[in-house]
Length: 362
Image (cartoon, rainbow, N blue to C red; front, top):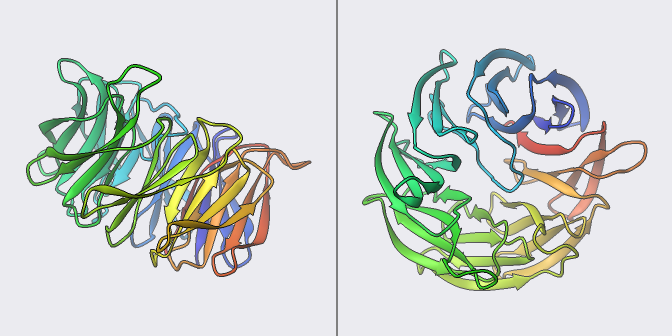
């Protein structure tokens, strides 16, 4: 059986949804503010990052089997990754963004085996697919400024620092592990500041290219599974497609938005790389883009503010969590059929924002 796990930050709970019926079959209590959810490749365990710990949930029983205390993590709706799991499922890396530490958890024992001091508040991170390195985004680190710290996973020590654009936020490794992409900004004073995508070569841990984009706020990243294209969803309503081979912009799509600055809350590419789905906070909709033409083919009105999104591994459905009101409920989860781009089902949730979604692999 397959399930969707939905984190609700305002009620400290995680709902478990049966994909076949789209019914909530379990409610798991979190100790404090569930922020994000990850699933290991074999689907045996589900991990939930809270503001003070990492919960391990047994997928078969939907029970919490361990609770690993960390230092502290603050909620940031526009940061995509605050913790990550190695592809072999042996280790979890967590940014403690209220401190200066990246914690390392051994999944076998659920114990912290290292706290790596990066000198300043870490914002986000990514792990290379070969499990060799963790790249950690640091804003205004002492003596080095806006950088990415590189951690050697075998030794759990910082082996390099890479200077990137100003105020870096989100970061993403490509599927080949050859490059890491980090979004920052130019150093120009406001209002002339523009987003800057830095391309880091993982062999030498150096920036080999920078790509300047248009408009500047709250950029979200996604990459096709074949590594050919990177998509950047900008808070002001621009979706940019970047050719990963050329390290150049191949298309920019402007979306009319009602609230510039907070236009989008999530972006994802379908498993077959044919479509990109973007959750539009500003327009209460889900935007569908064709990756061949880089054009918008559909805008799906959901009538509420989308706050999270997850696509099933088989590419059949996208689950969209919301944070606005449909009486008598304050939020919902919409299930969209990817073949028809029609809403198949609506799951009503209690009064809480659905801030994170994860699907256990089929």
